[in-house]
Image (cartoon, chains in turn red, green):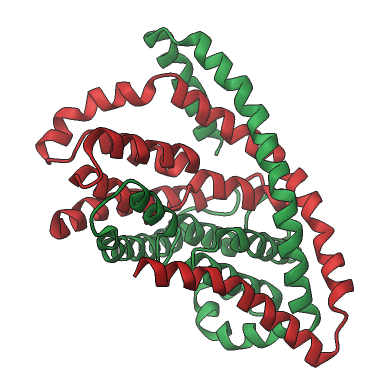
Length: 176
Length: 194
């Protein structure tokens, strides 16, 4: 199963690129010139998002380094115990929307602490797999075009993240 | 974003004082700004490559064909983009690439879509309704198979790691639909000058 999935994802990129190039050949468009023209934007976009990335990554790193997550964990542990949610997974609930690399790190920590087949591991895996790093996505996408007022997009994204977390807890209870 | 930024930084400083980790906090603050630049620079190559490929598809008219197919359902979600074919096709490519777990390919499509939407935006520093909808959908991170997580579970020797696929798919679908619901709901509550 895993093998066929990996095969699928390995072949899908070459397939997409082949289709695009074959279509260009068929239409006799200037593939090389078009490629260069498009690729030029890569640098400007990457540079344009730097200020947005600095802002969000500094804020998130400070939050992680400050011990705020541990304080929250202690604060919430009675509630978590009441709902039989492993306290280890609280960290991943918080980091999920903030930082992708941190989330993968926390997932590995949970696997190390509770074992590869524990309920906490499965719950954390579902949480990690079912969501995106909301703040990073917002910084990159809005940063690339210079949008400074995000309006209702972030509140909607955060509410959806919270809904996803609650759903993950319920669904995992049903499955595992 | 203002409040989130201020809140995150201030809470961190207060907590660091309480837990006595101020030096670690300052350290991390300086390193993180450095890291942000490294991440952005690291994006240049992959971004240039995919933007190049996308431009070939655009030049040959493939984008147009694709957008015509997907136009109808997407216009229900993005009604302002009736006359913005480029944006529609890039949004479609972004969602497809994300669903397949190709986040490297999805980001350039998403950025292209944002640029296309920015062209018809009257106030260039304020997000339009369509931009907000598009962002909310993206933050939900809809994906058919969570490849990265599966790889980590496999590497750590979890029994039947594929058992997380179905629950993850259900949860991510719920998150996706709720993102759409919330963004449309909040769109009515917020107005453009908030």
